[in-house]
Length: 304
Image (tube, rainbow, N blue to C red):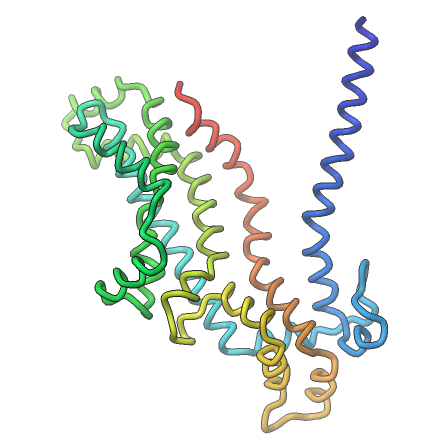
């Protein structure tokens, strides 16, 4: 009986390993495909098509065009500023709300719970948000990226709430006996004990803010407010826009080197370089943030 169980376990491990490898390849290969072809010579792509494993002729021309484009650099700055500001403020404000919601002496808890659950499933929609943002005078301003996202939603409150309730009540009672205020308890006791949860949800928030393009699409018109994801979307949807970016490599003082680089890039390789640039920061950050995910989410999901 023991041998049968061992054989089944070994078979399961082999199948699981094969499935995980396949999932990894399916996930990683599109990124690899974009990287090698963004570094491939455009003329080589014209003759032989896209490379599947490795670039045929290395060329940095597409990346040079992308990194020299002022609009992309501006979009990168807008996206970075938005991501940092929203992640920090949303984490603090949502955690403060959840802390108050977790206190046993909170008045009107059932009413807040009802409103929270309703907000998880119902919202006003794009038109209602548009009218609201116009009335608040934040339409087509940088604030439209910040103010609507200061609260992380009731789902995050539930995770924070479970984590805060797992903190021993004796810590709060002891701090209050020493004269600590609620703000002191929150920032000096609750926050340090909740770093894994805050870090995990903060990473999720940052990823969402970095990849979001709908806010730019619906609520801005100014090109200076474009985010990197939205700009990458416009390039992939418009070959003409990407071609113009490639042509911008030629300046009034263009030389033979610049002309040669222009021939090595076209709208296809520039599109891929832009998409890789948009995804690269998250790819770099994710391995360092991975350690917070399992511990943080589990702490926030299981009440001790």
